[in-house]
Length: 545
Image 1 (cartoon, helix red, strand yellow):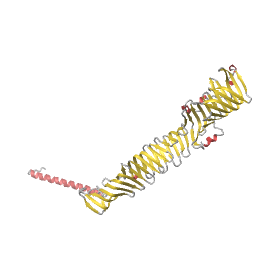
Image 2 (cartoon, helix red, strand yellow; image 1 turned 30 degrees about the vertical axis):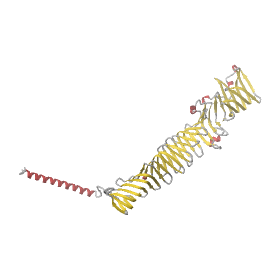
Image 3 (cartoon, helix red, strand yellow; image 1 turned 60 degrees about the vertical axis):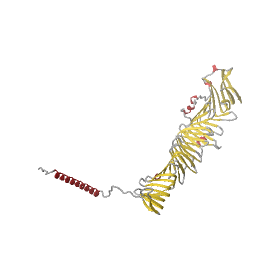
Image 4 (spheres, rainbow, N blue to C red; image 1 turned 90 degrees about the vertical axis):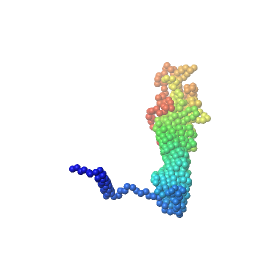
């Protein structure tokens, strides 16, 4: 069916009425949806009204158009509240339509149960939850107080920030820096630039430092130096407990005092009991005794002055002319009865090298006060062409007299001449004298035997075998050039052509040149196992294992 309109005016009127009906229908639909929403979600709201600044108290209030069109001036015993913040001051400005407060004179802000902020002037913006405090600023939280001249405080995050010098004081420490950030909820303060910390037990300087106000622990995050009553500590990462004196140093750590120094990849240190541990590239130096000990693991006690090094342990004693390099599975230093002197012990596979002296043994003891070295368990030492061995060897360095060598029980000295020819000395007890690092004389006491090649005009004419209970042998340029026999010597000289192979050596002859360290690096060369020691002084080693 088709309807025709009489004119355009009637058509427009109908069109407008239809459009109006559609709008009404649309609004009705929207109202219906809202009704359904609130029926099913009765607790929902589309927005929360911001809580405004409340003026709880003031002696008088006045509008001040000179400040701002919406400014109100509060004077005298002012108290203002905004959410969880309560403010007191001598005078303040509030601003209609905002949550801003400019407070002046004896300003105090309290937030929660523990935080109080004091200043001569504070600009508070409740809309962004921030306070800017100026002049004689003091922020108190539990037992910790922050002093500064300017502080920006985030009231929502509870973080205070200063950048023009500040000081933290608590029951344990005082800390200062140019820049600081105080995370109140975490009891943590970050310090930057010219950081200093101290109490009666230590002083600290750093560029960057974190501090836990609850535990008293300092976290090292940059170059930091700590000085306590005994030592100076340096590290670029780690922590230091200001209450116990305990420290864990992780990056470029260093512990030192006037006489000693310790470096490693990791150092654990405790000032209270002196115990510590060092791991990775351990380097210990005793400046007084000119001793360096290195390795990969070390346990030490600073108070008892005891240190043990294992894993690639190396002992070095240096002088202007030479350095002794000694390696063993375990090295230990303990204090001697004489103040400042040490006893150094080495055990299991000991090997050492110096330009003029090399040696191997299982166990060794060195006394710094006497410059005395004792070697146990099949010790062998070499000097130039000489090899010396015994059940026990003792070496003593003298200042105003020749250095001494003592070979106790089954002493045997072999001097190599050339391929297949060796001068030999054997006896129960032997005493050697060294001058200018060269063997000068050997005295044999008990069961003395010698086997040496006789010369005439530098030409070897035969092999001389002599036995005597006491013998004195003199050396020149590493060769025997004079022998004195005491108490009924017995000897025979045989020409070279008449010698058998058996007659060229004394019983017990053992040329151990394959064990000889040939360089400082050779002290780490694998060695043959040696039997357990049985000596009268072995208890010195056993007590320190």
